[in-house]
Image (cartoon, rainbow, N blue to C red; front, side, top):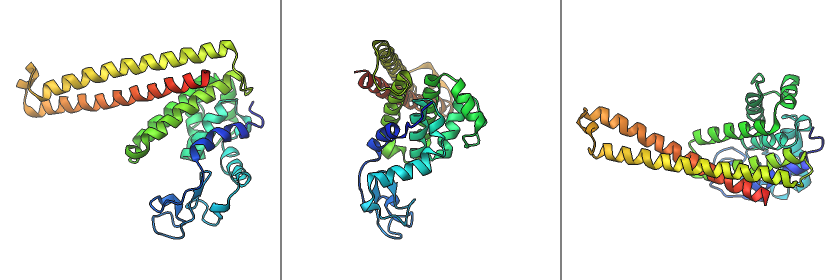
Length: 266
């Protein structure tokens, strides 16, 4: 059980949330939740003006931020009751996408009722489940969600990298039961995870290249299928191209996972 695990989880999360920013083009920096609406107070330690309009964001201290994270994110996901590593995966998901969504991903991972509330059933099933498998499932859910967002065209790579790194760090926490010091056996397991992710990336890349090659050939009329009605050919090409994009994304995600596991195990 991750009693008192907030400091270690928050240290990871704050790496991605950053320091002070008051970019006027970021709607989150405005108290009115829209660009140019309200007061431009900015964001610090991930605490944004649009969510906390009455706070003095610029002068927010790290202790202030930790108290907010504990109250509004750690407590709602019941972080103190979650196994090491699972707490990080759930907490970071909650910070990035909302605590209720983070809890729903945890519940989906362990087979609990997906109501977004970390009740007794959720905690019991989480404790009974394999922690590493739970972490992987939560992070897979997160990746699928961020890919579906329209803003993923601009921020998707950063989000994907963050999820990969949080996954690897969460697995390390689970293996060490929060101790943070990996044994040689732990390092061997993480090394194997890195190799497995790299192999998946290679396989997805090959499949993506093949899919795109066939799609281009069909689109250019270089196969027997070009004798089909144009709409049929167009439909087939579209499916192949979409499949290729999906495979390229999977390849990229697994490259990021491979690098993240390698870094954690170093």
